[in-house]
Image (cartoon, rainbow, N blue to C red):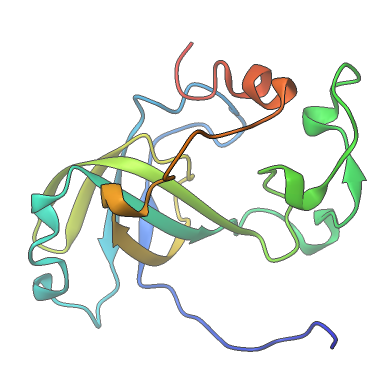
Length: 158
């Protein structure tokens, strides 16, 4: 079995955010909007306002193809942290440049979602939206290495 294209996807909307794209941390209080693509009407979002959180799947469009990594690397190039494989971290230079974040859904306004804590820059193509349901969250303790806790210490809040 070899890798290769298996399907095509199109953006269902785009992120609008005033955040400086060079900043890596302190995303927790960042307000953003997601504007649906023209082919969707407001009915596509009907009922979503009853959920407190939203899972957003998006394309890391600002990462150049030649910057994608596939092997070992130290998270954030920190020499204190171990080399780990690309799939053992959430770096933006992923093979398919796909990302997923759970953020707070503040309100739905027609075809625009107002969210907080979405770590996506302005113009990011959104590929899918899903309401967060407690039953889909981990069903037990979450285990992770110390380096990942250190890395995430200021990711959401300073």
